[in-house]
Length: 229
Image 1 (cartoon, helix red, strand yellow):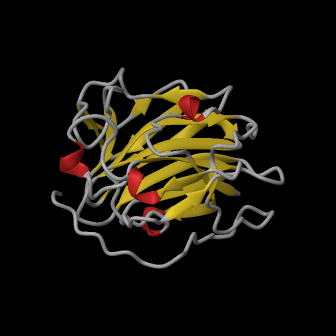
Image 2 (cartoon, helix red, strand yellow):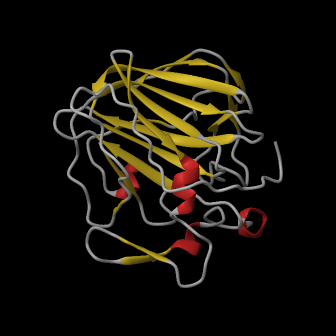
């Protein structure tokens, strides 16, 4: 399993240059508590909330999905896929994404590890596949106006790509800490896509071929204080 990051300011798989995807944008769901929700890409079940566009998510995109403290929601896909992408907005270190195949855990991704790769430090950069460099500080603050209110929180589009025939059929989002996991534009594709050179390879580990290994994308621990629950 490989993991990639789009350039700063990108909010979807399509604008990242990924083709042939199906995407759930949550614009068709009414704001409020979301228990079970059926979509073209699969069914969501558990505890989550649809939130109207605000400074923490959904900029020019409409509604987004929020998982509150102590909640989790599972997306059961209509068929196994080799690609999943999601927008990670107003990021905090406590968000967890888990990928499953046939009930077996394939990957655990902790957003705190991603945040460690994106220090808000002048001069800190990450390198794209094509050799371009991006300033990590540029990922902070929601794209567009009102950045000042969120300029201590990262916004990024993340891609999971199965390798060596790896696929998955369930994705669980959880937020065990005192914060909200804001996410949007969930995209899937049956086969691994051709990747644009503008993406950054942030792979920390690859699952064993059996797909049963717990993979920790561990680069350290970052404590991050949120201004809200």
